[in-house]
Image (cartoon, rainbow over all chains, first blue to last red; front, side, top):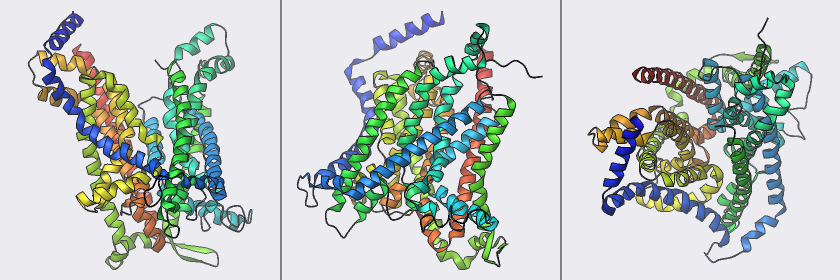
Length: 306
Length: 280
C-alpha cells in the first residue's frame, strides 16, 4: 500500500517536473560547489604538476626532468618508498591484530568509542605533536633514552646512532613515529571489514564439523585478504604523502616531500622552484599506481560486505 | 567455564592482553610528554627536579611576547576552523542533498571529486596553491583566514564520508516526496525533514573538519601563515616546554571531544531508532 502511494506520488512529481527552466534552476544549485572545486582543487593540481614543464621565465621545457636523474633525489625517493612500505606492513599487521581483539565488542560500547576516537586523533590530528611526543620519548633527552642510559643497558641505541640521534635519521628514525599514525589508520579502515564477518559463517563452519582453525584458514582469511591488502595500500599512500611529522623532526631533507619544500624555497638556484613540479609529478605517478591497485582490491573486498 | 566459541571472536584473555599491550605502548609517548613538561632545570648529579613551573609560565604576563605567536596561531586556527565548517555546510552539504534528490547519476562523480584530495598528497597540492594564493592575496589580502579555502579541499574526504553514509541510510527521495505531497514547501522539507535526519552525519563531518583544521600544518607552513601547528613548531625553538604543554592539551582536548560526541551521537541515535520502531 505504502509503496504504491510513494510510486504514484513519485510519478506525479516527475510527470509534473516542469520544463527545462525548472531543471536549469536546479543545475544552478550545483555551480557554487563546482566553481569552488575548480578554483581550489583542479587549478592547483594542474598548476602543481604543470609547473614542472616550464622554466622560471615561463617557457615550455623538459629541462626540469634533470631533477629525476639527480642522485640525491633518487636516494630520497627510495627512502620515502622504503619508509612507506615498512610502516605500512608493520602498521597493517598490528592494526589488524587490534581489530581482531575488538571483535565481539559492542560497536557503540564505551571501549569502541574510546578506541575510535583515539584512532581518529592519532591518525588525522597528530603530525607536529607526534613529533614532539617522540622527542620527549626517544630523543636525546627523552624519557626512554634517559632510562636506558641510567640503567646502563644500552648506551647507543637511541643516542649516538651513527654519531647522531636515531630519531633524526631520514627513514629509520621515522619508522616509530610513523607507526603511531599508521596503526590507528589501519584500525579505522580495516575495522568495517573484520566487523563484516558474519556470525552465521562461524556457525555454518561449526555445524559442518569445522574447527576454529578451518574457520580462519578456509573462511576468514580468504574473505579478509583483499580488504587487508587494500588497507595496506592506503597506509602506504598515507605515509608516502605525509609531511608534517617528518618536517618537524628533520630539517635537512631525506624524503621527497621534504625535497619539495627545499626546491620551493630555494633562492640560490634559479628555476629550482619549477623542479618542485617534477617532484610533485613523481609523487602523483606513484599515488596513481597505488590508488588504482587500491580501488581494484576494494571492489573485491566490498563483495562480502553487503 | 566459557561457552563454546564459534567464528572469529577472540577469547577474553587474548583480547585483554592485546588491548593492554597496545594501550600501554600508545600511552608511553603521551606520558613522556607530560613527564617532559614537569621537568624543572637541568638534572643535578643525575637527579631531575620536577614541578609545575612551565605550566605557570604560560599564564605569566612577563612571557606574553614570547608566547604571542602561539596564541595568535590558536586564534587563527579557530577562525579558520569556523570558516572551513561554513564552506562544508554551505558548499558541500547542499550539493550532496541536491545530487541525492535530483541528480543521482552524479553521485559517483561527486564521490570521485571528494576523494581526490586523499590521492594527491598535500605537499603536491601546495605547489599549486602557492601561485593560486598570489591571486587570492590580491583579492582578499594576505590574511591567514583565506587558508580556509585550501584547507576546505583537504577536508572534503573527511566531511563527505559521514554525510554520504548517513544519506545512504535514509531514503531522502521518499521522505521529501512524502513531505511534498503533504503540502510542505521545499524550504521546510529541507529544514524539518532532511536536515534533522542527517544530524549525525553532519555532526561527525563538522567534528572531523575541525580536527583536520587544527592539525593542519603543511598548507600553513608553505603559505607562510601562522596557525596553531606552525606556531607550535616555532615556539618549540624558544621554549620547548610550552610547545609540548600545548601539544598534550590539544591531543587530549580533541580526543575527549570525539569521545563525548561519539557517546552523545550513539545515545541519540539509539533513542531515535526506538522511537521510529514504536511509530511503525
